[in-house]
Amino acid sequence: MKVADRTPTVLLGELRNLVVTPQWEQYFHRILEAYVEAFDCEDEQGIGIWISGFFGSGKSLLMKVLGALLAEGELLGQSVHQVFLERLPSTSPERKDIERFLALCQRKLSTSVIGGNLHAQLASSNDPLALVVFKLFAREHGYTHNWPFAWAVEYQLDARGLSDPFQRAASELSGVEWADLASDPDFYNDILYQAAATVLPEHFNGPDAVERAVNSAMQSGITSDTLIDRLRRWCAAKDSAGRRHKLLLQLDELGQWIASGNANERIMQVQALVETAAQAGDGRLWIAVTAHGDIQELKQTVQQEQYAKINQRFALQCKLSNEDIGKVVEERLLRKTQPARIDLSTAPQKKDSG
Image (cartoon, rainbow, N blue to C red; front, top):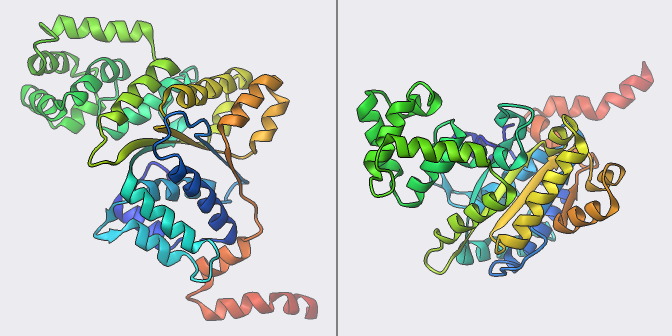
């Protein structure tokens, strides 16, 4: 299961086969309630969601489904909310509230979702978290795989509604499809610079000006402050029809990313990102992460003050256990095979008699 794979057929299939356990119902209730209550709050501090659990516990799927619900809309003509509610037990004590929260989301909010496995974005093990997050944003919006160019040029073109003209100009100059250009930007470097200068001449007086902007971005890098400021302004520009726009960042396998480097340094990067999002994001930027260990495990690695700040920002903590694994296995694997159900139910007796 890939968090970043939001292909309609894939996501619809995952929703249709979803097994919503009582534990999941409670977590969805808590998260949706907090999200709706903070819909217009510009100083919302608890914008983090920490989902932990053992391998195969469904933490990545929980995060993915949450993103689908907040992004709402339709998949192949079917309402995401309706498909999800069909998987929610009719006897669920949380059902009425969850339906209400989803309706409020549709009326008051719009949400974009970006994210994926952090390791898949690493060009180097030294890539800072802010850069990795921007790469996820760039990939979602069809930018090139050259992050300095994406940051310094493509984002600015996109903010001015010039992405399509820029991509068309680059394709015409090169004679190849945009997808080929985007995946191999180094080879088409001169063409990309020329296309950018052509589309935005009032800012770039030629390809050399584009190159200077890219070099400046390379030297400056991306910090949590500059990233959050840019994402906040991007969200504000998407407010429409009385609906406030928010962005959910999904950072899958954050725990693995922390463990694969200098743990203390990387935890500090997590703190900086979520702290800045809480303080400077105007309540528009929410961050969901997955990790094998719960947030309390960080106590062993960081200073108490640092831990307290992270714990405060990740106000919504979901610790998945295997208490419902029997229900998941039965519904997902055995509901269409009655003989297998019988074999499973009689297995202990067979073992005893043998």
